[in-house]
Each structure stands twice: as structure tokens, then as C-alpha cells.
Length: 330
Ligand SMILES: Nc1ncnc2c1ncn2[C@@H]1O[C@H](COP(=O)(O)OP(=O)(O)OP(=O)(O)O)[C@@H](O)[C@H]1O
Ligand SMILES: [Mg+2]
Image (cartoon, rainbow, N blue to C red; front, side, top):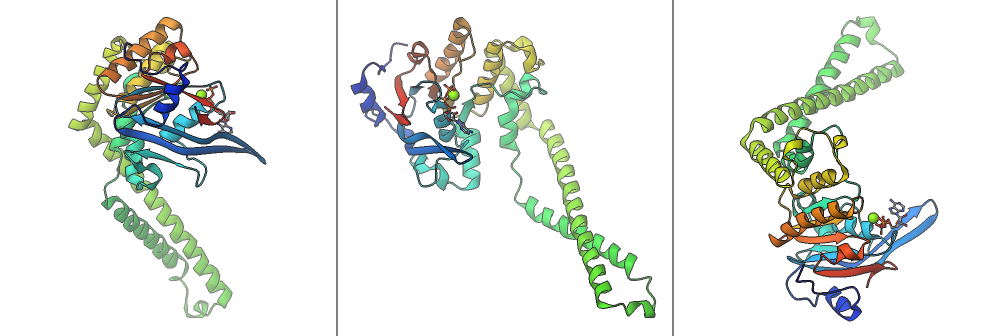
């Protein structure tokens, strides 16, 4: 790529760019992130005050030796994992991801970010269209506001019916003499009826959720939105050279083909940022080049890209290279 602005061999430029001097709006930022994994009693500090500014429209390559924390950093940027408490923040358009509401955060993960995992993580039982469609399914799976109210009502109804049944079964047949039970028998009967009520509520909610999911899925698959998404998935997969493989399952594909499906899945919801973890790591050189060409084409259309790689030759396709060393971005 001709517009390579920064090379890893130029530490002065690289350091400056890391602090946001390349100009342009900072779209995504890691601000002083620390991440420590706990293995039993042992703390493994991986990131130590790591900071990185990602500008809108740029393509950054994050390089570093194996185990330096590249995947960890990418997971934090994509909100797939959280930094140590009070250690720093991931900011999208200046807003802390941790400060977002739950629905904003879900949208950030599902729609703002497209994530390509180091080991594809395709679902083996789905064909490649459904694999690519997964983020679209997630986006459409939000429940309406009335869902929670109806769930509580169904639970209450189920509990009431079960309690009523329990009372009718255990108390109504009693004659006047039997009603004069000792207090502990009353307590036992009340406990049994309570347990019955809880179980009735739980069963009713379970059934309701099952029925809701089935009906929702049926209507969703018949709806225009699904047809639109399906068409988009087919278009992306076809443009990636997988048009003849649409009904195949991941195990029937080569590594390069699987990675193309993973990229199609990441692009499904038209993300603003692509976070790609070693997208060519398991591929031969020419297949890796094909994958990079796909990413480059999306980048030219405006996609911001943060790509992790341990290969300096691959990193050179990016606009800017930053190095993760000793838990920090250098
Ligand atoms: N869930 C986890 N629990 C404990 N330790 C972890 C966990 N995930 C990662 N680590 C450790 O954190 C360190 C960094 O891991 P990470 O996967 O981020 O490195 P990486 O730079 O992506 O390596 P590679 O280039 O091999 O993919 C490693 O020492 C790893 O063993
Ligand atoms: Mg990794």
C-alpha cells in the first residue's frame, strides 16, 4: 500500500503517532489499560498502562511477540473482556464503553465492532450463510419492552395456578376434624404449596420463553429484514469467492475459506471498526495475501481497521504499525 505512513523501524514517528499526532478524529482509544490474569494465587500481568489512539479511517497493525498481550488488547478494545478495575478505559468517540448502558454496550459489540478471531470460531453445525448471518441474528434478537412485563405476568399466573392446585388437592378434601392440624403440619403444607408455586412459575416462564422464541424466529425468517440480511450475506460471501460454497459447513472448507467466512461475519452488520486478530496467522502466504486484499478493499471503503499480527511483512500493509512490548504500546 502506498500510503504507509509509519514504519516500526522509525521509533520517533511511531511514538508520536501512538499519542494521536497523525491528525484526524480519534475514533477508538485505549487509555491506560491494564489487564492481569489470575491463575490460582498467581497474578499474570499482561497489559500495564497500555494506551493507543485509533483514528477514523486508519489501518493500524499491532505487532509483538507471542504472549505479549495482542489478543488481550483486542478483546478489551472489542469489549469482549474487561480491564483491571480502575485501571483505564476503552473510549469510543470519547465515551467510555464501561459507562454505556447495557443496550448501548450490546450495540457497540454487535454493530460498531466487527471481530475476526485468531481461530475463526465458526459454528460447525451451521452452513456458511448462517455463520455469516449470526451477528444479524443477534442484532435482531432484542426483546420488546413488553416482554419482561408479560414474563412476570406468566410467572405469576403459573405460580397462582400451581398454588391453587396444591391447596385444592391438599386442603379441600379435609373434614372439620382434620382441619385442626398441629401447627407443624400447617407449616409443612404451606411450604409444599410454596415450592409448588415457585416450580409452577418457573415452568410457565420456561414454556413462555420457548414459545416466544419459536414464534419470533418464524416471523423473523419470513420478514423483509431477514430477506435483506440473507441477500447481503450471500452478496458478501459471493464477493469473497464463496458463492459455490454457500450451503457448506465450516469443516468442509479450507483455512482460507473459513477465514473469509469469519470476515464476512465480521462485516455483516456494517461495522465502523474491524478488529482482526492474526487474520492470516494460519494461512499460507498467497492465501494470506488474498485475505489482506479483502481487508484492504474494505479499508478503502472507509472501514477503520486494527489488525494484530506477529509478521512484520503483513503489518506493512497497514497505515501505521505499533508494537506491544512489556505490556505497553511503544
Ligand atoms: N484467559 C486467560 N487466563 C490466563 N492467562 C491468560 C488468559 N488469556 C491469555 N493469558 C495469558 O496472557 C498472555 C498474553 O496472551 P495473549 O493471547 O493476549 O497473547 P498474544 O500476544 O495474542 O499471543 P499470540 O501471538 O501467541 O497469539 C499469555 O501469557 C497468556 O498465557
Ligand atoms: Mg493472540
